[in-house]
Structure formats: C-alpha cells, structure tokens
Length: 220
Length: 275
Image 1 (cartoon, rainbow over the protein chains, first blue to last red):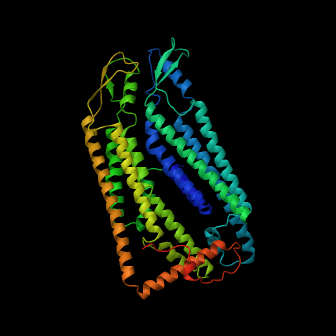
Image 2: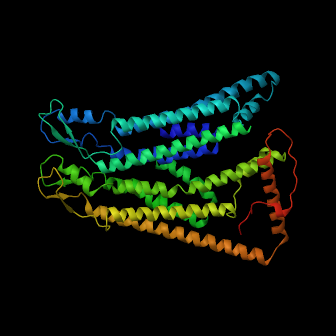
C-alpha cells in the first residue's frame, strides 16, 4: 500500500463526490502528498543525524533530540493525510453496500443478464440524497475534525509553526545547559507554513462543500 | 504520489491544448522534471553534509548553512514545477464540466445510448468561448508563477553563480569562519540550465497567448465577413442547448418529463462563443 494505491482508491470513490470534492482531492494529492514526497521528506531526512549539541557527552544528543522532537513533522503529516483521506472510503463503502443490496433485489426479479445488471449498477452515479447525503456529510465533518485536530497537535507540540535554529537542553546525561542546533530550520519553517496553508485551504474547501450540500438539501 | 503519477495526471490535459501547449508540456517534463530527478538531485544530494566550515565548534556548520541556504534550489525547483503545471488542471475541470452538461442534455432528450456517451467522452472541444477564457487564464497563471519563482530565486540567490566560499560569523561560530560549499561549479551549471529552460517556458507561454489571441481575432473577422449558413445553424443550436441548460437548472424535479421550449434569441443570457 502506498500513496499511488491510496490515490487510485480515492479517485474511484470520488465518482460520487460533488465537484468541490474532486477539487479537494486534487489539492490533497498534488499540493500535499506530492510536496511531502518529493520535497519535504528530503528536508527532514537528516533531522536526527544533523542535530548537533555543543558537547562530547555520549547520549546527550539523542536525549535532547527526543525531548524537542517527540514526533517528526513528516510522520505527523503522513498520519494527517491518511486520516483525512479515510472518510471518503466511508462513502465508497456505503455505495458498495447500496449496489450489493440493489443487485440482490433485482437478482430475484430477472435471472438472465445478471452480468450486465451488475455492470450497470457499478457504473451508475447515485444522486447525493437520503442516506448517502448523511454519509457524505458525516465524512465531511470527520475530515474537518481530523484536519483541525492534526494542525492543532502540530501547533501545540512544536509551539507554533516556526523552527528555531537553537534549542537549549539540560536533560541527563548532558553535563549542563547545552546548546543544540537544528539542521535546516529556515527550510523546515517554509515547508511547515506551506503545509499548514494547504491544510487550511482543504478545510475551507470542505466547509464550502458542507454548506453546498446543506443548501442543496434545503432546496430539495 | 511521485513525478510519474503527476505526469499521468497532467498529460491527460494534452488533448485540449494547442500545439505550443504540447511543446511546453514536453519541455517541462523532459528538460525540467527529468533533469531535476536524474541529475540535479544528486548534485545537491550532499549539500549539507559537504558544507564544511573551518572550525570544530559544534553547530557552526548547521547555522552557517541555514544562513546562506534558507531553502535549497532543488526544493524551490520542485515547488516551481508543481505550481506551474497545475493551472492546466483548470482546463481539465472546465472540459469535464462541459462533458457533464452534454451528458445531462443527452439524457434529458432521451438519446443516452452508450455510443452517444462514448462519443461525448472522446469528444475534443474547440478552444472557443468560455474554454478560450479558461485556457487563457491558465496560461496567465503559469506565466505569473514562473516569473514569481524566478524573482524569488533572484532575491534569495542574487546571481546564478554558486560561490566556493562564504564567510560566516553567526553564533556559535567563534569568529568569522570560512565555509566551503560542495560542488559549486556543477551547481552553477545546473542553475544556469534550469533558469534558461524556465525562460524558454515563459517564452513558449507568451507565444501561446499571442497565438490564441491571433486565432480568436481571425475567427472574429471571418465570422463578421461571411455569415455562412453552417455557422448560423451552429449558433442557433448552441442557443438551443443553452436554453435547455437554463431549463435544467430551473427544473427542480428530476423525474418529470422535460419539455423543450425554444426561447427567442433576445432572451439568451450568455454568449456561447466569444469570437
């Protein structure tokens, strides 16, 4: 399982999305997953090997790195992207369930031509109404919660989106208060801000989609 | 998701581009993305580990590297390529929207045979009307992003030459220390190459803008000179289709039988073809 496989799954599920949902999917994969894979991962590649403390005491660098970086940005973003993509699979599961139950009910009526019935069922596009509307709205709410939750977690763990050049650490076995230097702090700040911005854009798209769905339902 | 999948996504838009647009896409993928992946990334691979300062003070290397290279060339180029390629998706979205409307019309008028739907799926739209504007806007965004990134490059790294030696005195470096950049000449060569290809892409985009405007003007002149019967019929059919679309939007119930009423030409709310 890898990013392209997830992309294939989500594109299949997006047949039943609104247009805003399709835009959201493109923004997610092009501006977040792709930037993560081709750029951000190389910036954070040497985060531990290049974390240098001004001491020769063995173990001090490990301990200080662990204190200041409980979870790496890259891992947080990967988790965020995985969690944010999964509510769409809720919708896909519901559609599959509907297709299955429809196939069962038509199967009792006509015995021949079952292959083409199943194909037509698979290929049709269900309108977003009734139980599908609720499933879709729930998936949007979950997406918003996950995005907001992970952004907040990143902000809290790293005290803002800026990466400092220097941190001071006095954990045992460091002999006293030592200076520890973080590698590529400016580049990391730039990418953190970029990822936070795209995350906010995705949240705005999700909120707009929710408003659109509610308006569509009210109209109906 | 990597450059390969990105290529698959972006090259889908190719069908609706002009000839210059296809050349531009090939230049982007062959001379920029491919060169970035197979060559430039290995040149910049040891940019940090090979950056050595004339001191044993721990942390001085990191701090001086961060001061002189706030963001690596490679990452800037990767972001530039991603942002420059994405406006093409605007065109893809517009085409998808048009196909969706066409399919709806077919279904309404009861002609939704698989053959007709297949024809719509493979239909190549002419770059006229609203699609012309979408295409134009996408090219303008492309030019804006290219120029913006070239400017950012100029701000961060004035001059395209990579120096061999930089002098740094940030804390914790004990005094002004000499720091040596790894592979400066090779980096200069690749920077010049990438900047040159970027400039070429800007020129191709400008040429495409001029070509589109020229084509639209020619179509406008030809249209005003000879009002051929064929053109008149196609314009009436476009108006007819637009009225159907308006009717669809106003129609709340999906199950009621759709009846076509042809409105008078003066009531049309939107021009189908701009030129």
